[in-house]
Image (tube, rainbow, N blue to C red; front, side, top):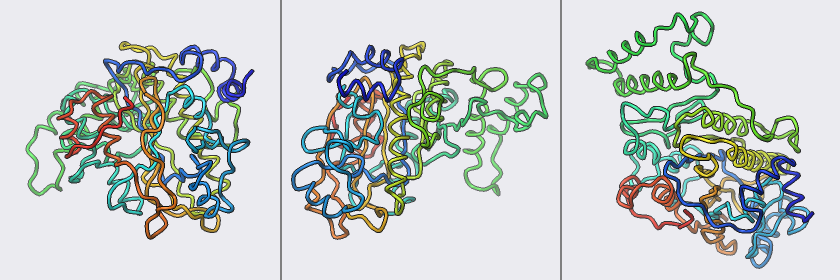
Amino acid sequence: MDFTRRRFLQGVGAAGLAMGLERCGGGGGQKPTPRPSKPILVIVNIDGGNDWLNTMPPLSGSNRTVYDAMRPSLGIPGTGAAADDLGGGIGLNKDFYGMYELSTLGRIAWIPGIGMPNPNLSHFVSIDLWGQGAATPNNTGWLGRFADSAFSPSGDVLRGLTVTNDLPVMLRGSSRSFVSITNSSGYVYPAMLRSGRLSASQWDTQAIEDAYGAAVSAPVDPSAPPGLAFAEAVGKQFFDAQNGFGTDGSLAPRTPSLPYPGDAGYPLTGIPTSLANQLKLVAQMLANGIDGEVFFTRLGGFDTHGNQATDHPRLMRALGGSIRAFYEDLGSVDTPFGNAMERTLILAYSEFGRRVPENQGGTDHGTAGLAFCVGRGVSGGMMSNYPDLRDLDGNQNMKYTVDFRSLYATVLEGWLGRSAAETDAILGATYPRLGFV
């Protein structure tokens, strides 16, 4: 058994190995599959500012020299026990569980050095800038504007979903926002249904729908707070969304085809499970026929100012292990529009990276970061230049090598099927496409 196969077996178990190698063609870089007629996009927000230099450390050359000098305690050793070789003097931390095997199969497009002009080191500002994704921000998000143009204002309520309990700006449109569903009970209105005070047999769906419709179409009180009409419309979307979860507002249960982090039989223990649970819910939705096109998920905790040597490896194992398990699990999910693995692109990003020099126990907010896309339809490899660690800005931060909106433009046009003109309109300007889909 070669080293790659042994690592694969350790990561997903014997059943996952047989399933994964069969679907991925048996090894070696594979040609991407054609864009499906009904694509699915799953966003993974790496929240807190991932220290991607320790995720994808330089292995050789001048970048390695600078890295060693600036990270005497937190630096990741070169190839061997700590990192795999991606080629070109770039490594991949072995704690980033399951990602090296997918990369060697050509299933990951890596985008190091991704950032923006005039970066901001505030989490809140950077999250909003990444969310808006516009040449001229207007308090809507790039996926919200996509939903405005692609989803019906009065229907398609389950096309855009977040499995987080908030609605980030990325998902807000001017006429259409995403719906938040955080568990398999869905979104049930009124709340007394969940508490058991009202049974499903007592729930008059049509009466509640009619009441919502009346509220939405009624004239807005001039003295009411701004946005009331929009809030009413979104409320009706939430009510409509729960109708897609069966008569009692719940999804049929599903057992994943292989273990995720936190499940019995998973080879690693003691790692966060929140992302695994979110991705299992997405797979459950797809297996139940929910016609979602864009899903939003999040793994937090990456603001590693201190205790990074302990926290960051655990977070990488959770991030990589969850994505890898989800990717393999989708291969067992058949939908009316084809196999879910064939239909799905996973896009992972963080609001910024970290500074190159370590502090006392961690790293501080930086600029250029790492994004990556995983899927059968991906043409894998490096899609941007690794920053030159000898050429930092005045705060010892990396200079970005690719604009984050080029990533969005590539996904909107190449995966979600928007025309070039529609893509440019959503983003407010033309950005180079990266060509991985």
